[in-house]
Length: 118
Picture 1 (cartoon, rainbow, N blue to C red):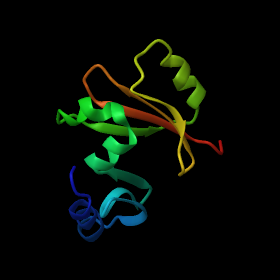
Picture 2 (cartoon, helix red, strand yellow):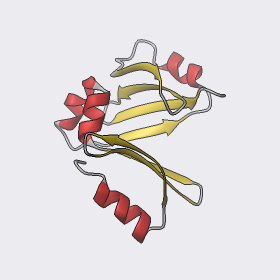
Picture 3 (cartoon, rainbow, N blue to C red):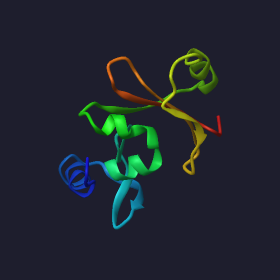
Picture 4 (cartoon, rainbow, N blue to C red):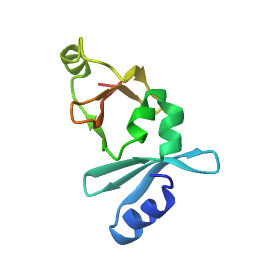
């Protein structure tokens, strides 16, 4: 998505989510976290994602999905990914997550993440 502001308005004002975190990118929102009744939704603009993860150029050329999946055992997932092409090498983020990203065979970009405090 090119602009997050219309989506944030939809999710907060129409659906009832609460904006709990936002990260700017240039002069707009680049990343947001929204929550509602135990559900957490994270949105990131194309420009922010492209600046964050260079290997996403391939993703942005299509209309596939990007999923963020929180796991309880990062090392177990990393072991299962051994030998599989990694699109986003393992990293620790400023928001306290250890992450790794891959394109699954259907072309969807998947980030597996675990809190570094676990």
